[in-house]
Every structure is written in C-alpha cells, then in structure tokens.
Length: 292
Image (cartoon, rainbow, N blue to C red; front, side, top):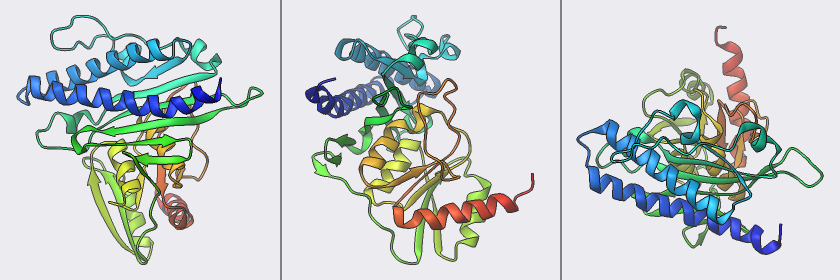
C-alpha cells in the first residue's frame, strides 16, 4: 500500500460516511415518520447499498463487514426495492484479508425513526493487518452525525471534527458525566456512579456513535456500555477516539479487537485517559460485588 493510499483512506472514510448521511436525511424527507419500520429498513438498506457499492468501486480488493450484510438480515427490504441486501465478504476471505472495512450504515435506527432526534450516526472504519502477519488494528475511521451537521474522522495527524483538529478534553475536577443507553442503561453503571466518590451524571444518548462522539466533543466525559454490541457498533468511533487521544478499551481494560470470526464485541469504555484508571477500578469493584 502506498503512502498516498494510506492518507486517502482517512479522507475516503469521511467522504463515504458524509455521503451516506446525506442519503439518510433524504430518506427521512421522502418517507416521513408515520411508518417507523419502513423508515428504519429503508434507511438501513439504502445506506448499506450505497456504502457497499462505493467501497467496491474505490477499494475493490478490500473485504467488507457491514451490519446489514449479514445472512440474518437477508429478508429485509427497502421501500420500493425488492432486492435482498448485498452480502458481506465471506467470513474465511475476510479473516484472511489484509484490509477490512467495518461499517454500520445506520447506527441508531430507533433515533433515526423519531422526528427531531439527532443522536444517530453512520460508521465507516478500516482495519488493517500489521506487517509480518500480526493481528492488525483500526487505521482509519469516520463517524458522520448527519442531523448534527458534523463528521468526526481520523487524519494522518490525529483526528478532525469537520476541518478542525479534535482532541478529547479532560473532565472537570470532581465531576463525571457518563453517556448511557436511552432505553437500557446497564445496572452496574448506576452502581458504579454511587461508588466513585464524584458528582456523577448519567446522560441518556441514542446510538453508540453519538455517545462516543459526545465524549470527543466534550458534551459528556465518558461512555460505558456492557449490554452487548458488535464490531460495527464501535469500530469507527473507537478509531476516531484513539486518534483524538482518548482511552478506548473493553471494560476490563483489555484492548478492543476487530475482524474476528465472531463479530460480537459486547462492552466498551471510552473516556479521557485521566479518568480511565478510576473508571476501570470502579468497574472491577462493582462487577465483583454483583451477584453471579
């Protein structure tokens, strides 16, 4: 891979995420909000087909793992389109590939289908195998927040919010705002909040991408999740978070690993590095105290 291509991957991720976001805004305008299921399915699948086609054209030799390219969603149909979704790269081929794009065409379908909500996203990330056949890691990523009019992405020098440099901000002393699920905040986060010895505020936000973006933009100080996710839920926002100087790991402190045979990646912590030790210790203590 040439240096030019490596730099282009950052820009490509941003362009594709933004374009898919514009498409999704158009789907909202076209269908309205009366039929939530039709809006969700149409948004999911039109954004998926756009990204699959664009990556096939721009990076024809790369593998793709998309939330909407799984066998389990083959029965879904978009409004006015009877085709099944384009499938992902076969698992064996993906695991052998040196470059894999991990995408979530619409992160936060519930929020997308609710009029006025802005906390949904598009994720585009690139995983690359390390030289010498190593395990590999995320090398580029973008999170478009179409209803908020901003895209966060990696760059050769770090991360960007639009055209501006992006660095995660430290929390205010004695206070911690933690982004949690709108509908199912994990029990242990509430337990954790009571044990940290800080002024803790739990802030409900929609999609995972919107939550991690809120950390990076300074709207909250941490995102903590243990309710079950997949690689496409976190790959792009984790790539941007790491590029922006944030801590991003599993809740036991182990690294986030992508392009695995089983794409489940059930938990994540994203915060400023100054908060990571406090949160990881608190998570461990609370987890040990919870009943089996």
